[in-house]
Amino acid sequence: MDLGPERIDEIDAVERWAWFAPDEAGRMERVRANLAGPLKLWGAQTESGRLAGVAGSFHFDLPVPGGVLPTSGLTWVSVHPQFRRRGILRAMLGKHFEDARAAGELASLLTAAEVPIYTRFGYGQVDRVVRVSLSRGVELYDVPGADEVEVTLEDAASPAAQEAAERAYMAVGAATGRSGWTPARQDGAWSLHFDDPVETRELAEPLRVAIARRAGQPTGFALFRRKEGWSPDDVPTGKVHVYPLAAADAATSRALWSVVTNLDLTDSITTGPIPLDDPLFALLKNPRITQRLGDFLHLRILDLPGCLAARSYSSDADLVIEVADCLFEENAGRWRWQIKGGAADVSRTDAEPDVRLDVRLLGSVLLGGISPVAYLDAGQLAEHTPGAVQRLAQALWVPRQPHCAFGF
Image: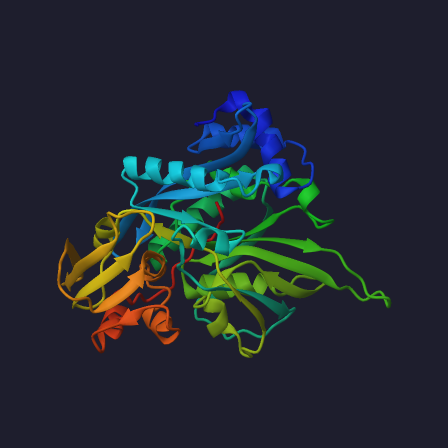
């Protein structure tokens, strides 16, 4: 059933049990702010009426190559631990898929805490990201124009700084055209991305923001915080954690990275998830840094022909794919996928398939961040016509990896 603010205390209780987060001051106000915005919230309850699970979604006009994909962003999925393994998650996801399809949303997108839970429901990993560790003062190559970029350091709680960061965020999206770069405010008020309860800081400072400007216009930003540290010999060993760092051009990227990697009283820098093709890696004079490979975005195709037709393609192809989908028979079966002049026409066919794959893998490769060749080499899909997967990979190719700067 749908949930509203009249059940806010029950919603909050389920969230606390599911995520066992610190008892944050102002948490209830933030929950109310989400409910007052574009968030849709629903749940599952026991026969006695006790709320046992909660889930929510936002509508995204998700950027994809050459267009946008109407998408439902799944979030806030929580099941009270007392009621695990009773089909609550399956019921909530069933409602999510039904509502999304009824609203004309062609796919569902999420950032997963436990990935195997969602692969069972057909979600495929669409990106590969890395979290990196750097030493203070790491050497970067010069970039023409970097000295023309002004970087100011401001409190992230400042409305003016948040407004400048939002303008920079939109500038980055326009300049890079990255798939997955969700428009600002579609997952609630922009200020919620700067939410900074003291209970979650782990003795670090309040959130800061570096704003980059060229000719007075915001062209990039970095959210970061520092945590004090000292060695036994009183040598400063402070840590910097950079959340998203986003830049609309090379000079801005160089300027921002040079600032956050050279702050006084610190000796190391770590980052949140950044794409494999982040400009940082080409800026480093010594690429031998600590990197942890991971994932961020996962996509579930709800309307197969709609999803395939929503994006543009890099080369022509004419393939028959056979798709397995245990949840939606409308997606399952054989499809002729004709790509010409960057556009796709998708129709049912009885022809023999060139490629067989699960809907999870099709969702994984849809945005071009992961090549279907990788799944072929791993034995996760079947190629019946030699060269068919390579032709598909060439058609799906994108110049920049899909990425989203913020979780939702």
